[in-house]
Length: 69
Image (tube, rainbow, N blue to C red; front, side):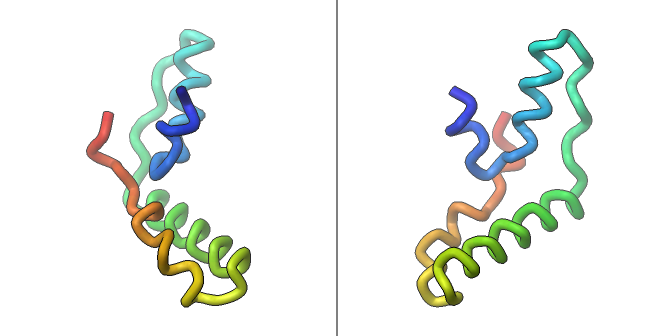
């Protein structure tokens, strides 16, 4: 189930693509890439909810699970 794996780990899609094609898995994302993904998600969430206050309830969703396999 890729959908659940992608929550907090959007780069899982490139890992799955590599596994399906027999390619070597991509290196783990750098801290800057993870930070950029978290920031982009937060920006899109604020736009979607039309303000910061309404988006606070989803803040835990933005915390990447980089330690998870």
